[in-house]
Image (cartoon, rainbow, N blue to C red; front, side, top):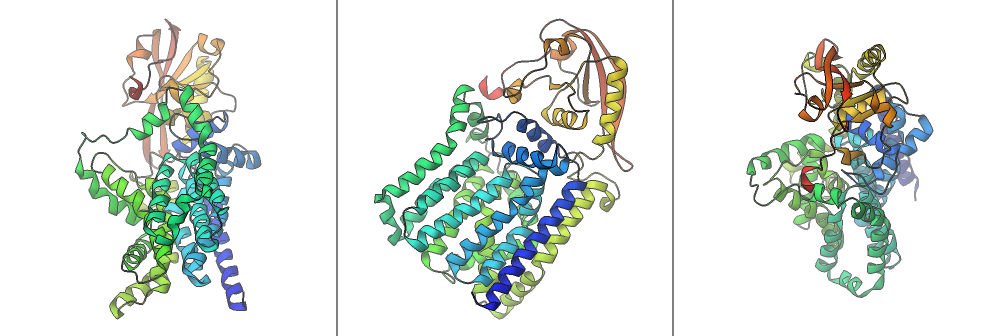
Length: 500
């Protein structure tokens, strides 16, 4: 490595570290989302699987809270730091596939400035470890291509297994790899090699705890996630949401570079055939499925997370390696120059808006319900009512409110979701003594009390209403109902719809 290359690598590392520091600062300021609070509860009862997802997100949160405690910063710490190995993996993968540190540095920075990576590692969801695993999978496959050594298939298996432990979307990596091997003639020999199948066994072995957990719980997690879109539910209107949401999550300039890079790779204008095909298969296999899915049901923007490492590589190809016509080159130059600053500014604005609401004049926006602004103060009011009324446990109707209550009420408080008990099968239930006396039921005023609550208690009385605020904006108003004289089981133990 010459002096210029060493300087480029060092500057890239410093830039990534600066972005990580920015996310750490945002993590300390921003209250938890309801999903994060829910996953934090998982982290207190680690298991082979959960109702919604595999266990990796709970492991990541557990690691962070072991270091920094049960704070918003602690919940997010390990997830944010995962951007460092993710960045190393995407740097090395790009360097191997397309030759040169300049394009590697570009891919690394472009991935990190997308909102998918910036917010996706700040807000801890299964997408955070999935992004890292997808980056290492791309690196491991690049090493298979570069070295020709079968042992690298074991690294592929480890990466794929960790991806599967993060989110079920990683199942699509298997077909993507097989298509890559089939399309590139010199790689077809791997079909006859035991190393390919050993890598598959490694991935299956890592994923085995999830399979065993599902086997013990009526396959509920598999059924829930893999039965989202049925062929009879034809609703093509959701297709219109795909491009706008990814335009925002990639940030506009990175999106333009990525699309132009994919076009250039499809036209064979950069890279050798194996590298081109690998990027395309890792991107299009998942995108084609979600396009089909969008014909039947909504596709959430974050579901595309596993394609972002390949997309960032394509964006770097467009920015660095392709020779464009003069008009196209001006677009490329503009995007390359301003992609990183734009991404940082958009991230900062999003964090300011989520915490304060000032950019929308304190009106409602997309972040207002999911980010727990105001819950610290709200929990104090709820705890005061609970203590005054003598309630021994706090119940709620949904997992999000349950997570927020558990996180923001005093440590050790009895908190439980009254229904959907399948979500909490890994956690110990409240003791009979905690459920025997008065209970406080917390729900939004607009939500009608379910019959399983109303008809199961001899006495139901609304004792207070409290408001969650963001500045002058009332986000939600909660009714606090005192329940007394349970006639039977406090919990509604009906199976989820997918098991009925």
